[in-house]
Length: 101
Image 1: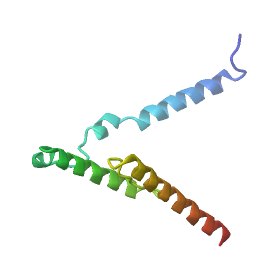
Image 2: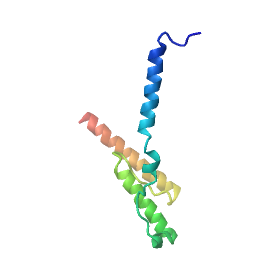
Image 3: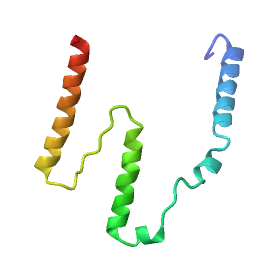
Image 4: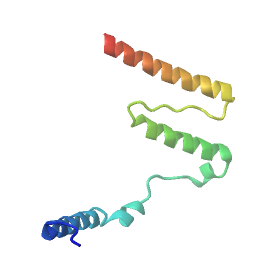
């Protein structure tokens, strides 16, 4: 049973795909091992320092997103839901205003 009418073309496509995949991942482990930031031992010594570092990291990450927001989930669930609903409703209102303006 033949899998294709053009085995040379299929073989070339598979070989090309594998070559490009291996070339794209050639320095994956080298790049992944580089440190991304610096942490001070005194910052990591207490829970508030660790939490502050995480919040700052999330804020930095979210700033790069066009519609990113940070919601404090450590507050009461009703407050978290209200904050999230406000973000969604404000976005929808702005989008609607852009569409009909």
